[in-house]
Length: 442
Image: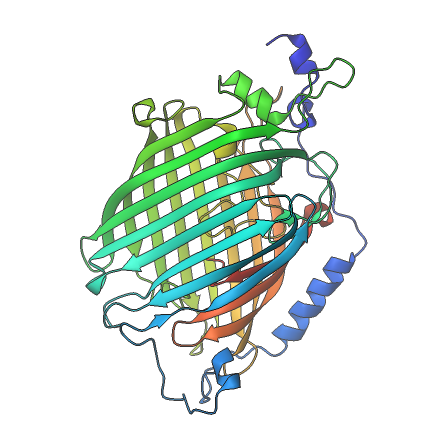
């Protein structure tokens, strides 16, 4: 590589030690706001079930008595359409639409409700993002189909590997609302096709497999510069050079094998149960992958009710581990790039990335209104990632970044338990963001 390359690598590779910057001792506006929201909503928490009619947004605009509705009807398609609008420096003005569909294919006594999320987004900077995700349960849950399909013409900064000391920025749905010192902006086109099929083995246990495709092309590393007067070696260039990946495009294509345990009472918004997905992914040049590699993928969720009502504590754990070979930089696991882009509230999407990464979150969910129309959440999360390219390598669990926050839930459909989610998340160094979504974070 040569000494010049090493001497001019970004701070995340030059540093001998990695330490998170101390949190400002003064309360920021975001901290005051999140404390106010959390306190106000928590004071109204309902810890015991009450004999009241469940209500959702539809009830506010209807004179019909829907008190007897206790769950989704078999074969009925629930298909709300929601507009999307916003602004970020990387995209400019953005507009689009999203659909959150759900359908019950057999009796709820033995079949989970199926769901799908789709959206299309256009930006003023000629970016187009199309996303479709689905979770389909056939009769008696005999077969499960899970998918995450994306076509993205995208721009997003990256921040190197591990837990780096880079100034933070406030975000909208994980995308920065202001330029950030230390960020390494990138443009790229991205195709993701993840599709898994599970076959039921017994009441709760499933086995299956599928295909996983990540293809990044037309990659533009905007800060990379070899001019001696203004040289800047980006994290993407350094990692790609060390691991012999091309700089403009690469693919990670593999097959997956999985074991799934699922005892949740509802796949959209669980009140109780456990979900554990344990899988291996083998990427092969024979299938079209740029390099061979293998990965261990683990996801676990636990839902525990409190008392006789629908208030509960939920836990979420994600672990992605590189077992062999090398994975391209943009395909490495990072927060905010899970199936529904919900991990890492309090930070930007992709803010923390590593060859190995572990993410954990807990959430307290509770009613604010006795009808369940309005609810609230309090959450806490932590992430750790490795970086073996430093002079003193950062190992997994050496350093953690923490996030926390509060949010509101508006019940969009009581039959399917689908909520509209608005969260305010904060991270270390006063980073944070506002996060909108349909369905729970996990």
